Image (cartoon, rainbow, N blue to C red):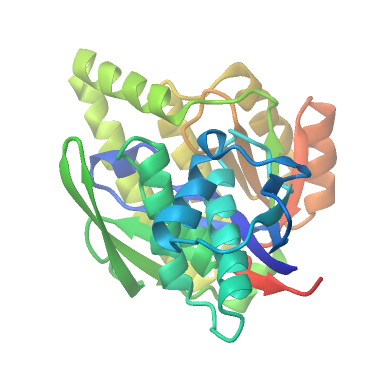
Length: 325
């Protein structure tokens, strides 16, 4: 069987502000999704009959991208990510199955991470009714540290551009990479899952409504943009302390936007005494928080005591790849 793996992601800086034109900074994490694909006598997913309507990402990649018309396939999916928690699980699934299918159909062809990122983005857009950012799929495919913005961001390396025709019109993004210095390897990310699922769409709508009611909150969006720039500078310089400070500052602004929650606050407060910085990650309202720590196990234990489920990861893991059985 052909086997593909794609990592999940965390947003370090820029959540919500990215909707209003500011850059977002994401990193790939060690945990992700593994997909195995092999020929079979009937179509199955996880050992049961495959129902395309229930799995739009997989169906899109099979039918629209690869236009597969070969023998039935058996597909096995194993995820190490919390679902609906802001870790990019659906993007990782799209990238992993794209890699596995390519290896099954064209075993001699090398993986193209950019092509897989575009493929995954198209699957996300189809599943989300024409609205999808390329952040998750690009970070999962490329790995490392990725910056997504409306234009190239100073101090980053341009990788590719993406666009999508949405119900609101054409949207365009610049996908850029940051080469992280070795000094950042002295610390790890600790992810804490609250156990509460979160809807990105609802959280984004809630922020838009608050901005209508209180236009002065737009200043907090601009502040997140400035913090993101400072965080990027700190990462490029390899300053863990400055990265942590930017994470703390970003969290304070997200609090003011009303996207934190009691469960997120409990995990952030539990992690901070042992961390360089801690904040919610993603849309908020539940989901996950992250902490940057030189002693990740200590932070993981603190998160667990506070009621969360921890994961430990490198700061910028490798991207999509094929695995040996």
